[in-house]
Image (tube, helix red, strand yellow):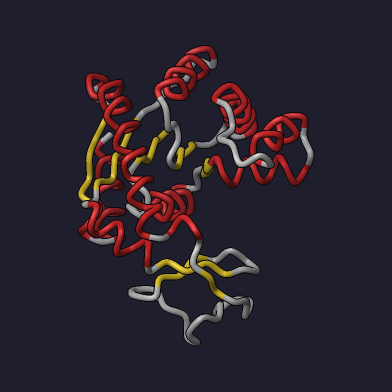
Amino acid sequence: MKIILAGPPGSGKGTQAELLSVKLDYAHFSTGNVFRDHIARKTPIGIKANEFVSQGKLVSDDITLEITKDFITINKKKGIIFDGFPRTIGQAKGLDKMLTELKDKIDFIIFINLLDDEIIMRLTARRTCKKCNTIYNIDFKPTKKPGICDGCGGELYQRSDDTEKVIKNRLLVYENQTKELKSYYKNSGRMHEIDGSVGRDRVLKEILGLLQAK
């Protein structure tokens, strides 16, 4: 089964993707993680992607889709959860075309919705470890020692894109992209929307309910 988890920054889609991938034994596709893996291994695709990343640019759709196809091929015997991908209409159409060629398809598109005020509250409270990149939240997932990672003892910091000004801009970008994506997927009969404000466990239960009904 192939599942797309979409939602605004801070909606918890990454957390849900991790929980579902473990619970269902599915492969977890996160473009950021997959890009970093290819770049670190200096694969031909990684070298292409790094040309964009090193200049602070978004990786082009064609390279993103190339990396996606590689991931799907490697995990052809497993279910896949696409975490925040596709982001654009070009990527969505490219993914559908790719899967059709592989005689496969997307089974579910799940949008996790959350109000802007709660997103801003969640993200401005987020802190990341400089050493191991573990993410904490000073409001509902604090560390035992303030400013220190529980796992490796590294120093925590606030990412530059977790400030209120940047978050508001990211939400505008997301809203514009989402309108197109929802329009693209809405008549497929596979799109579902979930209220992300009900909490991590309730959201997970609702997603699992949808999948089990299938």
